[in-house]
Image (cartoon, rainbow, N blue to C red):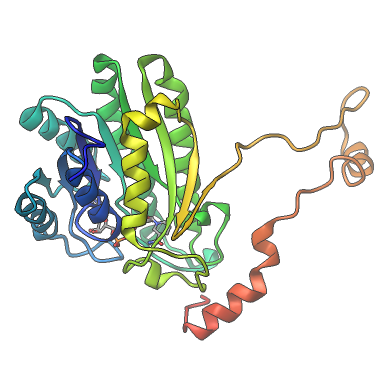
Amino acid sequence: MGNFLAGKVVAVTGAGRGIGRAVALAAAAEGAKVIVNDYGVSIEGGEPTSEVAESVVKEIVAAGGEAVAVADDIATMAGGQRIVDTALAEYGRIDGVVCVAGILRERMLFNMSEEEWDPVVATHLKGTFTVFKAASAVMRKQGGGTLIGFTSGNHQGSVAQANYSAAKGGIISLVRSAALGLHKYGVTANAVAPVARTRMSANVPMELKEIGEPKDVAALVVYLLSERARAEKITGQVYTIAGPKIAVWAQPRELRAGYAEGSWTPEKVADFLPGTVGTDPMPMLERLEEMARAAANRDRPNA
Ligand SMILES: NC(=O)c1ccc[n+]([C@@H]2O[C@H](COP(=O)([O-])OP(=O)(O)OC[C@H]3O[C@@H](n4cnc5c(N)ncnc54)[C@H](O)[C@@H]3O)[C@@H](O)[C@H]2O)c1
């Protein structure tokens, strides 16, 4: 066991499988007391079972660590609150929350139903809000803490997962808002965009050229939760981790600007925009053909 997180209390959502499980195991191995949350659902979000969270708690305890299970749905306000209340009741504080839980419901936008949109946005985006909200109220009083959201490279856009992409983009804005709003209370907030072999990545409609294991992602998360990262004042950042690669994403900013004399009219915009501010080429658009070929090879739906 290391001591990167000695004395800290950390909650991890979606900690029963895949990346969340690796984060929970690594945090415990580094000395944290861990709240293991998992609703225990299928990849589409159905058939919940509490066994998934409980089995990770058993693994942590068997390895000599401390953990407690919470099998609630983090898409509910009560679920997010229960995770934080459990941390306080069992261990008296909450130092870090890591919102990893996620589901997929893939469909082309023109065929996507409300039942395919709502639960995906609720699990990822609202599920990050419910935990951040409950945790940040305590961290504000404690005068410190770390919030970590899980996004995806797909926040740039997705052919057949507009629901997932929109939720992942929302998580980045939520993380940046948390970084800004909680800065004066000593709370940091960052986002991780992982690429790792799990049941979810097995469902990605394109070939992943750079991919690693959940434990690689866990190493980054443990660092971000630690005093070492807090000493570097890391906040408001988005990191990709994909096997041996770690990358930081740019902050959104205006690329080019132009100014008109007087007020704009459509005619004036049409004359002015193309030759001055122009466009910023979309990298994913360049890759559409490659993605379509990969999707066809993997027998993916295109409807
Ligand atoms: N694996 C990758 O390469 C990859 C790539 C980009 C982003 N991500 C993101 O990383 C995170 C983890 O993905 P993974 O690959 O480990 O997936 P996974 O399917 O292996 O694990 C997700 C876990 O979340 C749990 N969960 C789902 N809904 C929940 C809810 N409402 N409340 C509590 N728990 C719930 C599931 O039961 C499951 O155990 C997700 O947010 C995913 O979008 C993963």
